[in-house]
Structures are given as C-alpha cells and as structure tokens.
Image 1 (tube, rainbow, N blue to C red):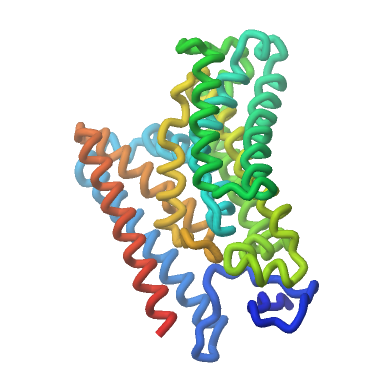
Image 2 (image 1 turned 45 degrees about the horizontal axis):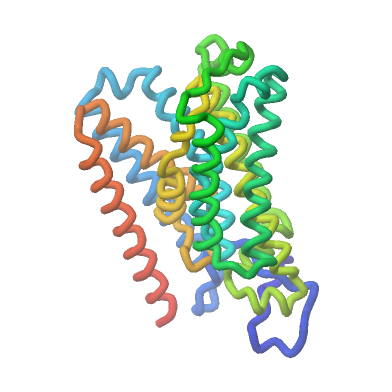
Length: 350
C-alpha cells in the first residue's frame, strides 16, 4: 500500500515513505479515497463535457467540413505533436517546476535532424538526432535547475533564447526540406492503420507510458512528493535534485519525439517550428487540472486539454474567424481554469 508523504514535522527521515501519486490530496472528512475519486471523475467529466460541446458547435456551424473523417484525423494529428510535449510539461509542473523552452527545443531538434548531413543517415538518423538533441537540451535545463540552483523560469527562459538562436543559425533562416521517403511516408494516408494516422498512435503510446509512470511507479510518486513538499520529500529519502534532473530530461525527450513527429507532419525543419508550444502545453496542463504550484496533475486531463484547444483552433479555422479572436478565447479558458483551481483549493483549506 502506498504510504503518504511525511510532513515537514516528521521526527526523522523515513526512506520507505513517498507521496502517493494521486491527483488530489485526501479530503479532511475521513473519506479520503472516495472523495478523491469523486473530484477526479467530476473534473474529467467536465472536460469531456466541454469537448463534447465543442464537437457539437463544430457539427452545427460546419457540419460537412468538421465531421468529415479527414478533418477529424487532422485534429487528432495536430493534437498529437503538442500533446507529446504536454505530457512532459505535465510531469515538470507536477514537480513544482516550469519549462518555457519546450517550443524552442522542438525547433532546435527538428532543424538539427533535417540537415543534409543528418539526412544522409536516413530514417534512423533523423529520428535518433531529434531525440538526442531534445535529451541534450533537457539535460542542460536539468543541470542548471537541479545542481546550479537556478530558478526554473530563468533557466528555461535562457534555453528558449539560446535554442531559438541556434536553430536560426543552423538553418540560416531557410526551410530544410526532408528528402528521406520513409519519413515522409509516415504522413501519407497509405500508412494509416485502421484509419488512424501513425502520429496519433505514437501519441497514444506516449500517453499510456506517461500515465503508467505517473500513477504506477516510484518515479511518479516521487514526482508528486517533490511538487507537494520538496523538504518533506528530502526527509523521506528522495534525492530531490536528481529527481528534478530526470524530469527535465523527460521533458527534453518528449520534445525530441515531438520534433520528429513535426518533421513527418511538415516534411521539413524550420527554426520557427514549435512556436508558442510552451504556452499551449502549459495551458493544456492547467485546464486539465494540473496545479501550477505543483503536487497534483493528471495525464488524462492534460490530453483532454490538448484536444479542447486543438478543436477550438479547428473550429475557428473552418469558420474563417480571425486568429486574434481565437487567442482571446484561449486566454479566457485559461483564466477560467485558474480561477476554478483557486476556488477549489480554498474550499479544501476551509
């Protein structure tokens, strides 16, 4: 049975105790687990309700275009790229951190993986390079934050600027076209499996693995413990610095995978790839129920957040609405989600 995280007043380190990987802390009413499950169900059901409402709106405003199989496949494919980034971001935020560099890391990995020298190694060379570059950038973030004691906001902001600059230097402002057929073939309808694009399948695999890690492993419990109370986690025997390093490595890995998926989707590498991904990933995690203060979050909620934002974008595009209105709508959703989170937390404290 999972043991609860020790409080800061624990008499001594208990190395066998780590925080439970639950989405919310037990209630004070004595019925902790039932109340926990109820809150989780209500939150997920609410997100599903919002998504269903958006599908209804799309079906009413543009029934032929929105409900077309090709359009639904497009929504899922576009959600897959940012969704993989969001999985990594969810882990980071649950731990009490933030990563503003995910979009820039996607750009850097995508352009490094599509240089002429890299493409000479074919499919494996492109995929390997994208993942390694993402991991390397995540490693830099992790070392600066965990062992350099830098504030995550500052460290990842510096990575954002540096990675964008390096991506621009590599491409010289030009688009790098992919000429490796096996990579391009993944984006063609002929490669779909039972009507499902390969990128969507990759996204599903990442989501399943992420869910299992967060909810069924010691790594997930330690992530929640560090985000809930880093000092209590340290007293419980958790190496907080190493855990944070691993989390930013995980974020970098997700960015590398997303970069490869974006290469398949666009058939090219550009220094502008991943623009504003950091904002979309943070927003999706927040409306999915992940606390910015750390200690709580769900992979399922984050995935639903990604699908909601992607569906909104698609509906706006089909109805020829301006992008500024779309951004206002996204901003309103984020504000509403944060207000609901704040009200929920205040309710638990009373």
